[in-house]
Image (cartoon, rainbow, N blue to C red; front, side, top):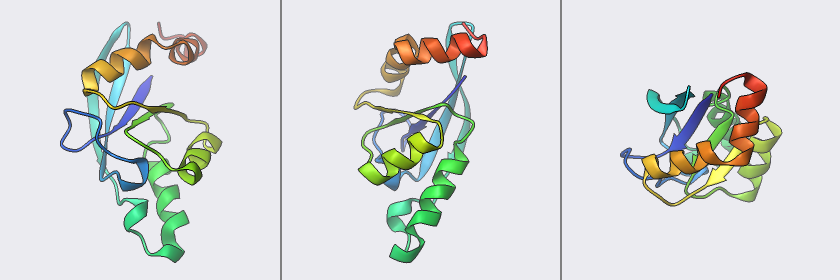
Length: 119
């Protein structure tokens, strides 16, 4: 199970979804979490107003394989779009390691793992 984290420089969860310049992608398997990938992103909030929706769609597409997205904040429009894409949004202000432990211990994450067959 993959978890995308909006963070720069990569120690704490610092970025708003719409302002995320990168997503750190973590993999959870057999009870442990490890960094899998770093994906650069062109933030939707930096796009021209008439290109905002396309930029938001590209951000979501970049992490579509991550059922859980951890951010410092997310606006209502982006929140709706991320949920419509089938992803779970988790808003946490914390160190990444601590936040990931909270996510993997959450009931929604545990249910998703059971469906996927990943304990």
